[in-house]
Amino acid sequence: MRGLSSFGVLLFGLSAVVLAADPEGKATFEKACKSCHGPNGEGNPKIAQMMKVTMRPLGSKEVQAKRDADLKKDVMKGTGKMKPVTRLSEKEVDEVIAFVRTFATK
Image 1 (tube, rainbow, N blue to C red):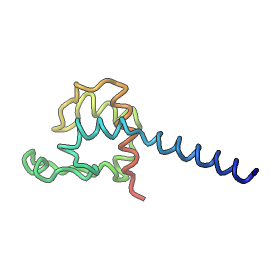
Image 2 (image 1 turned 60 degrees about the vertical axis):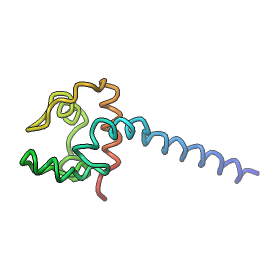
Image 3 (image 1 turned 90 degrees about the vertical axis):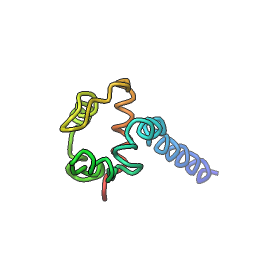
């Protein structure tokens, strides 16, 4: 019986981790970021070519090394040729950043 309740606690804990992966961040990423950054954060080659830029994969060590505050600034104020994303609330930007963290390369 004790093993069964430990399993339940573990299962509940894993459920919390899955929920923490933030489906809202994914949905917001898909509606506001995916067209340029691609579904997996690798960048849309057509957009990169059109803008004459090299898009760093969002899972790259360089991007993942940035602090959340710096990523938030990049999104809200723009960076390089990326224009500010003004249609997202600060909460949505935070959720997108949490989702982008799931792209980290191992």
